[in-house]
Image (tube, rainbow over all chains, first blue to last red; front, side):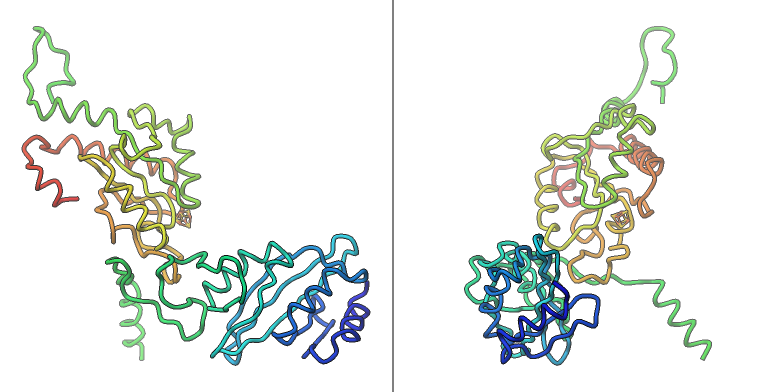
Amino acid sequence: MKPSELLNVIEAEFGDFILESSDQGFDPYIVVEPDALRDVSFFLRDDERMKFDFLRTSLGTDKIDFIESLFVLYSYELKHQLIVKVELSHKNPEVDTVSDIWKAANWYERESYDLLGINYKDHPDLRRLMMPHDWVGHPLLKDYKSPKKYHGMDLYRFNPVLKVTKKKAKKKK
Amino acid sequence: MSFYHKAESNFLVTTLDEVLNYTRKGSLWYLFFGLACCAIEMMQAGGPRTDLDRFGVVFRATPRQADFIFIAGTPTIKMADRIKRLWDQMPYPKYAISMGSCSNTGGLFQKGYSVLNGIDKILPIDVYVPGCPPRPEALTEAILILREKVQKEKFLRKEESELIEEA
Ligand code: SF4
């Protein structure tokens, strides 16, 4: 299906819950209201015209005003692609899991939880994936500051080159 | 050392330390510990071209049989605890070679949130090998340096407490 037709079908079905949609970019995308994510996902997977049977990847980004979580979907049968985005507030980044709809989402959601602190409700196993399990904070948030110490290891390293270049810069001024 | 010359009258004079060290440096076994891209170059070093076996340097899969450890690759904070545990399992006398910029200082991932800035925060390192990645020849050089260090050591005269303090 062509991107514009694809978006038309989705908008006809879920008009109120689609906050934004576009087919101008590289791939067509829709921005969905967080509460409607599961309904939209079931529709995208099961409907005859959609048949998105494959979750390519899922990412999260801190966009300062909001935290974005996106899912890249692909249909092997109909050969079309769609990006589904949700925008979450910094205070309460919470959204329903889609890991039971596409199994591949399981570890992606764990990654987003680890690095951005997005809480996927009803996820079967929401643990940290990259960082140690007792780590504090979520590293990809813009206001994140890394700790100085962890388990007695010093996480700071003095950089002699940086000091020399700073001195040189001062002298030039 | 008097070992290298042919003993004409069937005996030679040496010290126990030297004999011990001579045998020790001839069979340095290492714990094969690849963490990232540097590990590929370490495997190269084990291959026929820069044959490490000719120094008696053979890789082992368990820390309990190893004399030294190659840290080859990017040590992450999550891995650091495991590296420390492996290091603690190695018997004395033990050595460590840090291979590549990543394990020397954190390398190009130094500012990363998940990377330990240099393996020397958790282990005492004997030889640092610079490069990204170092060539197998550089690794051979590192092993030659380590052999020199082993040969010079007065291992028998050390107290056990001294050894533990060093490590
Ligand atoms: S020093 Fe270079 S080659 Fe070695 S692990 Fe780091 S990035 Fe890879």
